[in-house]
Image (tube, rainbow, N blue to C red; front, side, top):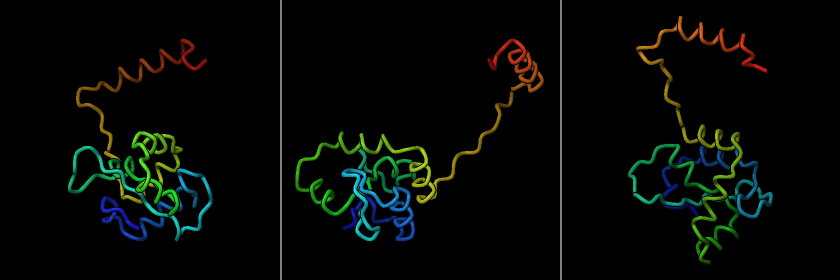
Length: 132
């Protein structure tokens, strides 16, 4: 079963998301063969026509069919589901974001940054025992 909120995710990306959690249900922590894992989408409070990858990652849970059925049939609190998502290891979160085609924003220095001053301050801090 595919959630409407997850319907725009392509099958190869769904496969990659399932591999990111190493084939385990994020609720019961049981190993499940990849074809039997499902994505449960938790819609965000505001409906977004095309959610960004970070928004999707925060609202997707990879679950087995039994847990997925329980989520829909029993009153599973949304807070409990979100707590599971919050506990994802960084590497899993990063892999899911890659599967959702997340591209981080490029960092650029502020225009008024004096690099010579930053360099001098860095040297001063490191010579003052900054790295101890």
